[in-house]
Amino acid sequence: MKFLSFFSFLLLISTLNVTAQNFISRNGKVSFFSKTKIEDIKAVTNEAFSSLNTQTGALQFLVLIKGFQFKNAAMQQHFNDKEYMNSSEFPKSEFKGTITNFADINFSKDGNYPAVVEGELTMHGITNKIKTNGTITVKGGKINSKSLFKVKLVDYNIKVPKIVTAKIAEEIKITVDCNYSPFKR
Image (tube, rainbow, N blue to C red; front, side, top):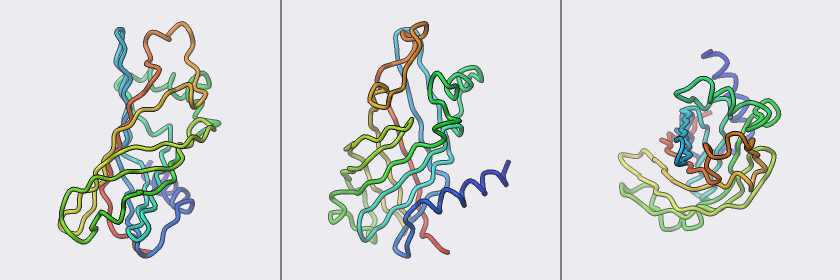
């Protein structure tokens, strides 16, 4: 399993624009939460890959859909099935964008900095522009990014079978939390 994770990392990192001024996260945490009157659904992965360019504000994320873990194995199977995320056909979700106010962030000085991020999120074969707020924390030369945003399933052509419509929210909360280290080749 470790070999598969490492191989996936090498494959996925090759798609990220990584240069000398970049910081990288190999084990970013991405979770999602669906709340309805009937049921709450939560899943998390600690295998998100991310690249942050501190000179341009470029920010990229890549998440393998099958990496999300649920408390219930049946939920995990249904999530990956053709009727939902269809992770065999759409194995990853990807964000490519920029921190639009990156000039306000001093990556060499400890502090918490508000960040505005804009870019394109691709999920389930559909790409949409998104804009969200987050926080960049610099402490002891290390960088952390956090963000919370919402995604409407309909915007990504994710259809929920009528039999379970009441159990899955139309809008899902996504939380991202990544610790970055300088990228070294």
